[in-house]
Image 1 (cartoon, rainbow, N blue to C red):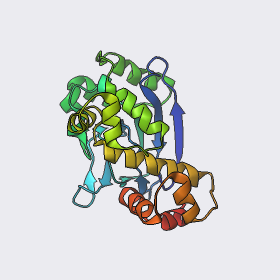
Image 2: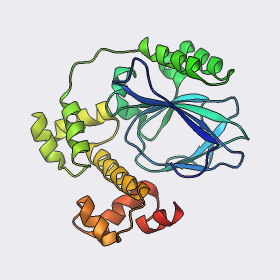
Image 3: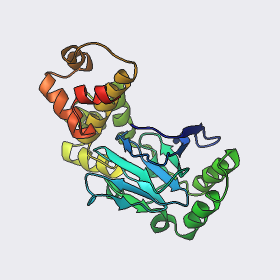
Image 4: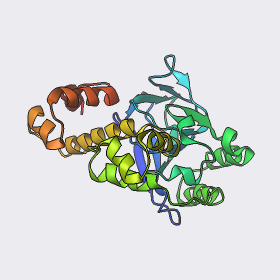
Length: 261
């Protein structure tokens, strides 16, 4: 995420820590225009009473977002801005490959999309959305949200895609899809189909997002070495491939991005 927010409060789940990374409350400034970058995880968002707009690679300019929604996996950056001062949103960030335990649908249907929670869980979700936004957000409201997801839990069998995700993350995204398929005991086409249904995007797109997030983590540490040195440190064969990957996800070259940080 780039840009300025009034505040970010982070809460850890009490029960669903195996599935949910965190609950975050973002407070936005009046003139906020925040760029969010793909993280390769599903998010469920509850927004305050003021409406929010987003501008994405698939929208026609600025569009109003639903009050509460599932944010499917994005493969490109997008921008969000509130209607006014002191608006906020609560973001439920799932861990990699855990949204499937709560969302009763094939996850590729949410790719580069936002889906109103009413379409998934009906009035229960709408009631929760309005109730928590009438209050000052604290531990009690976060607990309400966690209890909601406890009641929506879907038992799943262990999947070969779980191991593939671990391999991708441990290699920082530098692994061949054919090798992942072989490790999973599937043909490449079978693996791609299963991966997309469970994760929400193709394995090659997911690997690219992991590679770029590895780069962003290095940038956040104020890495001072040259782009050439960084290219080979990350594991890219050449600088052109690195720049192309980076720009396709963030919308900027590595050099321009670092200057804007």
